[in-house]
Amino acid sequence: MHQATTIRNRFSHGARRGVTLPEVLTVIAIVGIVSAMAVPRFMRFTATSRLETAAQIMAKDVEWTKLAATKSGMKHYLRFLPGSDTSGYEIFMENSDPVNNRFSDEDDSLLKRAKLDPTVRFGVTSSIPVAPGSPTLDLPADGLGLGFPNESCRDDSLVSGQGSWRRVVAFCGGSTADMEAGVAYLTSKSYPDLVEAIVYDDQSSFRLSRYGWRGSWAER
Image (tube, rainbow, N blue to C red; front, side):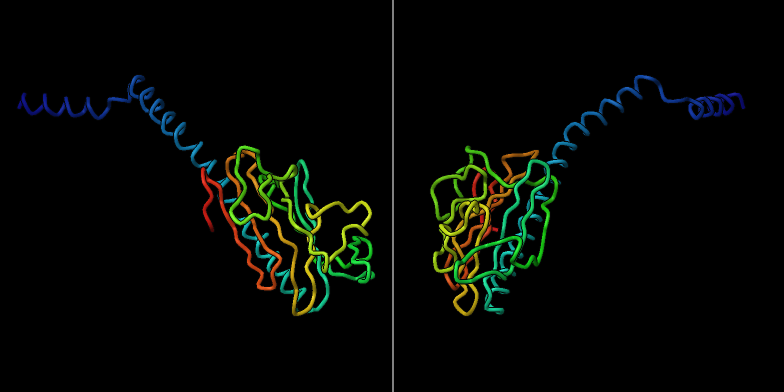
């Protein structure tokens, strides 16, 4: 009887025993170590996902603009809007004098205005090599690419203050709806080593490619 009482008392004492301070500190330390390892990985994963989504959406809009120009027979324009806080782009349909091949944001019809994800910007650091298939071997100063204007689609010399291909890309209308060749770079603001490149040529076949830089270029 005495032995049974002793065993019962021991079990009761163990059940009432709380968690000690060293045990709590150990758990906190383990949680802190795991968090320190997991949080940066999660943040990078999130940045990668947002960058890839932004590039995918923009690539689809480029394809849509090409198709709209082909079907309508009207010239279309894609204008990049780089910004320090939020970047984006606009799609226009020719509505001004087609003889001069001029782009005018006042006369032409705005079809779409899109903003990039706030964590994404136009541009690429000089440490990243040019994307495969790029029509230029030089990295652009503003990240929008150095493309080759299609003079049958637009005459840059007649557009005062418009600048080069970097700001406005033209899509010819009709069955031979060529577009200007070039590459646009999208980069994560928090992780400059994460880059997406949208590369397109000026052929009627319209070859559009998308590449991602994660230490090396890989086609998407």
